[in-house]
Image (cartoon, rainbow, N blue to C red; front, side, top):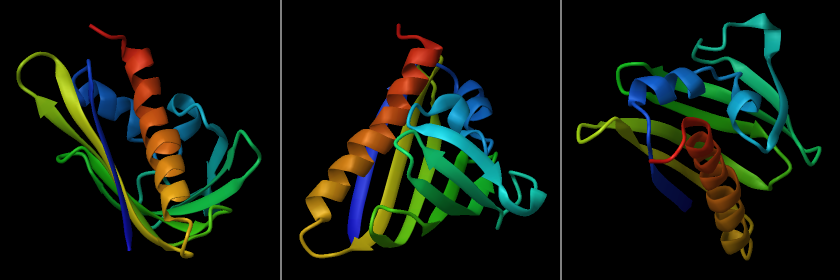
Length: 146
């Protein structure tokens, strides 16, 4: 099993960042790699078990299922059901932790998955740098740097 972990500090409160990222269907509003998104079967975007179906700007299609959502912990857990990335058993967690020294939050995004032998480095880089860090960088731009 491969593990990818990326963390960052965002110069905004956990409440404010969570308000931006909480919507499981809201990726296109804050992540630059996402072109569009919809929740299948008109389910609420915060219902555990709902499936988001979205397209990347490069045209790839991904389907993910929400496994957990906690407003108390500022976290969500989801799994990939279908994607062009060549991953299996992919489960990811996005979590925020308030930083009490200033109006900031510590953000963590991690995933575990299986893949074909020889693709570990490529996928670790594309997911860690492209997806996770790319999302954090967009949030930093949105909330501004101090």
